[in-house]
Length: 220
Image (tube, rainbow, N blue to C red; front, side):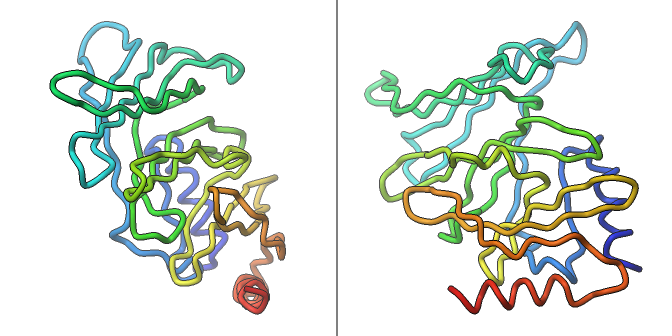
């Protein structure tokens, strides 16, 4: 089956499933490096808010709270959620970081995006046309006990991780069958770097992706 056909089918499924798995023959990703956490949801009455807690570090005294206070908000310009890192000490909570964000969904995806073997925090930002999903990314640093948002990550759509080459691949859908690949990597201070060599998929040319990766790795 052609890679773009697989990608189109997967992206269509994503609208309802909130997650995406691209053709493993193209993107060399690990099947076991991702987990999704969802909060307890009320079964009756209108759902308006959610709370999720997770332990991002080995030290369980540190917690991240993800709170969506208006789950019905659909205007991207309005903040409807917070993400807070705090530490519990002697029964008291000390806030270490607090961000206000817009978030379309309430689930949390945990996945390593900077190749340090620690799962980072991915929160759904928005869903555009053609199932182009964007995210907020928070890099988890277990050594310093910090989480740091990656500036500009929300501009990527359908991000995947090529784990073999340590490359973040943004896969944008456009038009009836158009698929655009662009490549990024997270550098020091959690900066998102555009690696260049982006291209529009051609179902008749299977060399485009491996050639782009080869060119990127040549300049590492």
